[in-house]
Amino acid sequence: VIRRSIHHHISASKLCKDASTALQLSGLKSGDTIAVGGFGVGGIPETLLNTLSAWENGPSDLIVASLTAGVDGFGLGKLFECGKVKRMIASYVGENKNFERMFFTGELEVELVPQGTIAARLRAAGSGMPAIFTPAGAGTMYANGGLPLKHAPDGSVTVHTQPRPTQMFD
Image: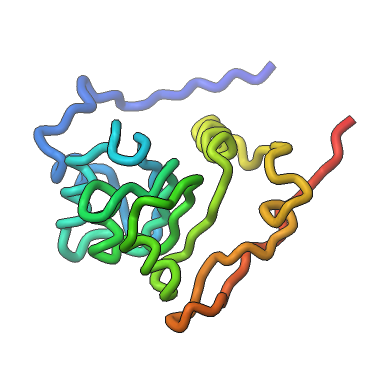
């Protein structure tokens, strides 16, 4: 048996006086992946998203994982409008017209993922698991690759998804 003693400095509180302070202390940098809770406009971290979208010279080229792409002009919609998102990982993207325009003109990469798979991937990442296996999408373009990931400004597809690793289990 290996026993490991881990000593961390634990602050008395994780509360910050405002969203700007929270983002500054977060260490968020360009190219990072962030998970955004909520569904549509319900339960989203609106104050943090507003502050992040207004942060001049702040992080950009973000990869965002969320169940939905939100709506125009609110929450995640503001992040798209200010150009901070490089790739969106979502299961539903149907109510944000600006998001749609950005995707079809090559300004945004979009990875469509079944809702349960997003939840499983987030749980796995939070637990330190490097991968998950799920039967969702097996034998489809989700597993075999070929879904549009990025378009050119003229609407043609420039990048397709790659095949996912598969494995048979007994």
